[in-house]
Amino acid sequence: MIRRESAKKILKNYFCSDSLFCDKKRVVCDGESMEEEQYFSQDIGRLDGGYGWFIVLASFMVHITVYGVSWSVGVFNVIFLEEFGSSKAATAWAGSLLNAFMFGSGLLSSFLVKRFGCRWIVLLGGAMSGTGLALTALARHLYVVYLTFSAVTGIGLGLAYIPSVVIVSQYFVWKRTIALGLAVSGVGLGGFIYPALIWWLVDVCSWRMVMVIIGGVVSTTVILFGSAMRPLQPKSQRNVDIRTEVSLWCGFMRSHSFVVLCVNNLVYCLGLMVVYVHLGAYVKSSQRFSCSHSAHVFSIIGISNLFGRVFHGVLCHFPRMCTVLVYSSSSVLSGLATLAIPLCSDFTVRAWVLFFLMSSSVWLESSSCPQVTVSSCCLRVRAPSLADHLQVFYLTTHWSTTTVSTWQEVYWCAPAS
Image 1: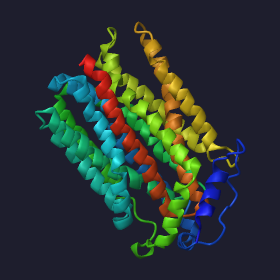
Image 2 (image 1 turned 180 degrees about the horizontal axis):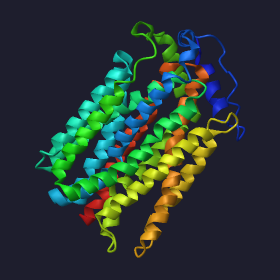
Image 3 (image 1 turned 90 degrees about the vertical axis):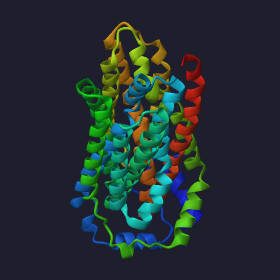
């Protein structure tokens, strides 16, 4: 059984408190655990290749869909402002609550994944998110949007997201950082495709028909590729020693490094969510920009995110590369880029394009490194179920942040409503 001290030692070695580099090839387990025996008793040929790469493709497509919708909240915010005529503060709740429900449902998704496996929860999430988007087309009041678009769609996206990350961690061990880097790069492609697609559809048909179309695309994509996420182990082999999991969990929660990482993520997202929700309306308010320019800004962020996530997945795979150093540096740069938004010129489209290309390049770094960092912690203890716990706890900080940032938006937007 791996004790708390072992977990703390793992994080201490991983987070490189005394050095800028760390050796990722060291094995720091003090003893054999039940989880380790169950995990590695399988045919090693099934790991780090083969069908696992198709799992990466399926996870990639789910990431495109999930984050394509959640990162388009700025576009939806402009649509809801024009349709319902509510204040900016009230309208901002729709996009912020969608992300809050999405990340907050990680706890529910964790429980369901342990009980039913990744495949069925992805299918459930795809059905819920598509249904929520389609029902939004029937909304006649903004409060109905809170229920259908924010709650139902957000929970559905969250249910689909957690298993798509966990399943990749189960199929890959030593190539996990590369596999996860490729899988989460779908976030950038989704952010590139969906905003432009939504605005193009709005020009062709009504926004209500757009919600139905996007709902159909979301449910079809997630269900199609989610059905390919077959479990690595038979259901009878998924049970593990509860005392081992509790010991691991308590050990990580007592680690100052992991707590600091989560607090950093909370503070970071506190400002990031405000930017994503109000960026589209801010660009449109400029005299020389239209709604299509708002979509272009989000698309530029998305395509830069795509290349950056792949790059960081490969970069963090090098044995002596400290991912925490990369994460910390990119967090600082993303903060500086966000502070520069009010200084951008309103007279040149090129200035906006170059600026958001630069800012998105650092946003993608700080958003991709945490997943690689947390998943690499699981590699140290060789516990596949630990990926579930750490990802859920980490994403819970997203949930609390988006909830708090909603109140922050209400405070700042109320005078301008």
